[in-house]
Image (cartoon, rainbow, N blue to C red; front, side, top):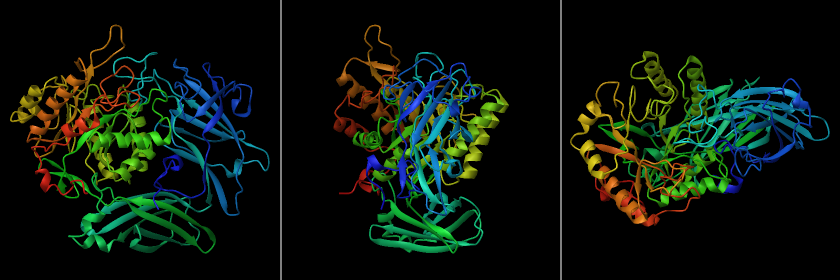
Length: 605
């Protein structure tokens, strides 16, 4: 069954074995500002580790116990642990969910390898490096240079102190460290792709190695006690892909009970077993969301029907732990808060969010626009870095039903001259097409906000302070706005006309209270008190909902974050307004979609 305990949710929730263990907690820690640790062999030493840090919180944060916000480009971690018994024919695999930015890992002084990319997981088979007795020692070196403009950093500031819309940095380990005992031949990856019109699910994956003799993979799909499908397939190579027919999806009048949506977030349990004559068996649990997304006739489609996304911008940042969540429960609570306010989706901004957050979006029902941290400077190295990390994000996340759109670039970050530099335009177009080649099942926006060079959805950012201004730009004058308007000071379209692509206001609002004297503050538009906040929010949202042209929206933003104090919640996740009042504002009918009583995705009693 799908896990529901936020305290015991596996860091990789779509491929879970029962026997995994957590390596978070107290680690030895050291700054290496002179970058001498490699030359001095810190990977075999104990003396340099003169501090203790609580993993997985970054050293800049309070919860880490270090709370050193000044830049440190190289940091080291050390942890001892007792290895569990490893049966014959099995291995011990060590996992790092995310380390910002470049990491190298040693076990008992033996170098296992390196990884570059601050948001994506990596792992090592550490069996051969284990000692026969005594504690095992993990050492990790992380390098994160805030002055490196080609390194994808997102909202992490390159200045010593946060300014404007940028925040304190997140260096080193910031997502869980964990390990598991696995059979020597085991399932390393799983990907699911539902196909509603064919009443099937594609199962794709990778084994840890090519099998010496053919093995059998058995998949069972269940909805509660109902077995939807059961299939066994012979596999004789490392990568595999096969289709699983789901007969219950053929019944056109009954299949809606199985279809995933924010209002009906059905997840199908999947159990996968690997059997071979000469290898230990491997059993994992996973899940599938049966849904399809797309665009047509100027509308966003969910399960082939028009759907109006009501999203909120989410920075995924906490004051005490920065980009790391304060605990696993906080990730579930974040999803609950978004839904309580009346939103049906979230645009996770300049961050590839923790897979456990995506799990709760899957399970509780929340659309997600999958984004990534961008670089600040354009160069061949920046292209290589962003592309490599983006491919790893797609590989990690493309089976989550909650993710309905991919956004590799935001507001021309890292491509500041996209309108005039052909190489930058080519890059954005190429990463759009690269994304479609990896995942053709979702809409992609090459560059969201303005200077759109290639996109399935036209996402516009406009912080107009009044509803009247939004009504003027996005009502009857929408086509003029797209062709000649410059709400962000930049051209909106570089790839011709809007044609029949959906247009969404993917950033607007940004309302904040008038800052106190000498308060460090950034905002787009101010209000004097909570009542004015509610009135202005109502006016802005009314203007958006009244437009027959807009196919959805994303309000800025969910929480106050550092000095950017324009959230509907405080940084501590306390609502500024009664959530019921916000919900009433956000959930009114939109002119661009059928009346709510005809909406097949209405909430069910």
